[in-house]
Length: 287
Length: 299
Image (cartoon, rainbow over all chains, first blue to last red; front, top):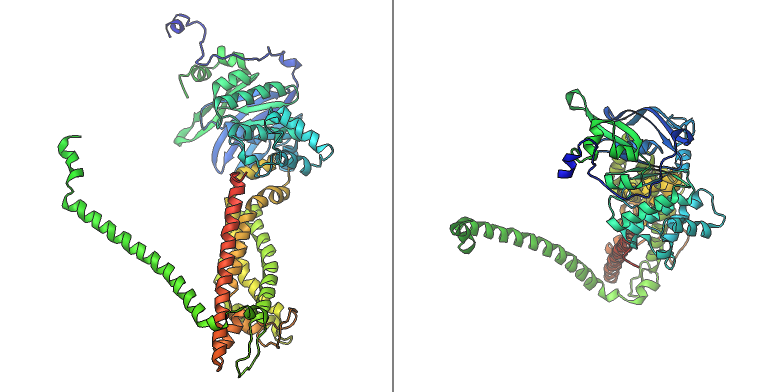
């Protein structure tokens, strides 16, 4: 820690990790997938998010970090209309997906989720066979041609094929937690989505399983756009190209809501953030 | 802790001793209650079996009743078993899909206000006495058309419906919402998710509930007296005519002046108990099997 004090001119984050991240291309060359403008989210009358605006770029991994209760999960679930399932949920503002506003009522959430897949915090495989877990979505969406090949490809991409190829007919509930989560990723990418949303995908997993999932994100981002919510700053620093930092703001009468504080390249967020609150968070002084 | 504080472990004082005594008494009372419950079933089954012993034979299941048999001819209750089986079968075929659909609507699609309202209606329906259901079906279907096994099935189905729907709603509530989300996040419509993910997860529990509803209804007598009790002789399979049933047969035989008929009634009652026992065991087996399947321990 003495070193840290002597080098007070530059920030030394609490997190220092190896990454395979490539340097970011200039933003003009990036294609925008999501254009989020003034997004407010409310549960009943309680605000969860206020005034979130930023762009998510294609073929990058975008991480959402921030303390508990800052609306990270609420935000990511806005992107594929998952919050429609929550009674009393409302949102304002626009979310343009390739230029098309997907947040309005006349947009069919089923169509949105068709191209924007999701992996959840807890592995939630169907209580079916490993094969059927991946094949079910394909069958429902009518992608039945070459079903076996599609299942094999998805399982291979999710780095699970070698472990399960001899027991595809066995129940997926018998897999370990890490295997189940990779199966969920295989299930999500089998239907060839454009974007994969990940809501703390590794929070219930051990470090080795976590590493596997991070590696497969690296391998797959040339084909998909990833948005990942994570509690774990090391994880954001390792996998993300862009990082959005959310924090909690407090109003009068004890109201709390989440806000976007800063959004920039991961390198910048972790080494030279422009906002004091981001700095406090990434250096471990807060949160 | 000092030695004096610890010494309470060695020498219990009066208060501790009293607490222990009270504890033992309460435990004993609870144990007795459980024992009485088990004994009650044992005595009941044993007594029924004993009274019907003279008629308990294979003939009971293969031979039909011989009405007004003043001499002790060899007779059985095959006609009643056939009738009960057909009527309960048809009732299940009516109540199970209908009840499941109600439950699916309530737990997967309905807004919260309607959920509560339908739940209240189901509870009320479940509380309606069987005789009232019998009179209703009698007035609706029997008057002017005559009795039939189908009328009895319909009355049974009305009694089963709230049980099936209620138990299915409860089972569907146990399906983790993360599974629904998993289905929906793939871009599957709600109905496909319900059919392909939620129902397969719940089917074991739903069938358990259905089987228990069968057990609940199989001994109901009142609705059958009004809808399918004036019967011909011999074994009949056609539900368009009135059919003899086990509960009605027991009711009539118990009232008969012939002593061997009484034994026949007891024997019928014994078979009914055994049937309900088997059905309950099936329900348990189904529940256990689906639990093993869902947690993946089986393979």
